[in-house]
Length: 304
Image 1 (cartoon, one colour):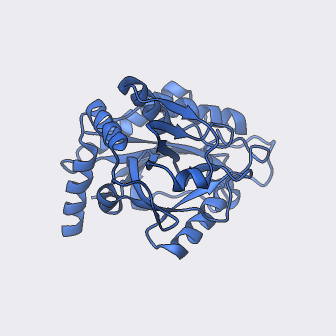
Image 2: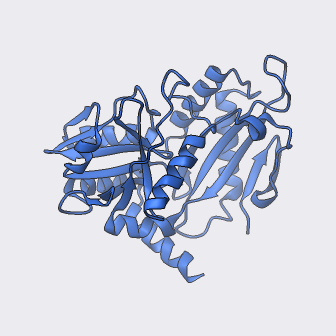
């Protein structure tokens, strides 16, 4: 049974949801969004995600036609409407998408197209990566510079991510790209942030060229609670190749250990001890064993 999507005031099955071909989001990538996920059917840090969404809307001058609180209540309503469809032990991503609407030119009054989507989590992909570590590849395609568009804006104008993905999968069909910024420092992966561990210190890029991820924020908070020292600094490929541990972090999988970088082994143990600590702390925080859930859902999906 298909999840129900809310789009411009109506609920429709996910596989039937659509917008006009003349919409600027489809034609020009004139659209912002934000994605959160559920644990046991409850949305994690929804308010923080929506604050970021509304900052992106403010920056791009798109009027969604509703307040942040109204969007929050509507999102929770979508979750409630879909609860009877959610399989036992399953969770999903929930995304608010706001396009500027239909029209040829900006600066004119347009009615935004607003939708709230539910998307499955790719447990089948992530399950073996939790066990053996993901392979990350540094492509030639770079992150957008802050001079082009502020990285704090979460938008769908992301052809650079597509090209980076293609370049990474040329090396390994299962690889995740990790992009450099224009100065040659590691910035982010597609849809997420990146961490390394060196000499017991958890390190991530400073926020001058990255999206300020909610998962990244969660990890920094957990590290502080666990007494793990952290540093936000420039990280070069050299630092990754010599790291003791590394991991990706993003909404669907929370944090995903890295086993290889550009076909080079990262660390002696995957996942490493600090990665394990953070995974355990996050699991405790949300009341779901993240790795166990991923493995169990992957088994179910692979058997279907």
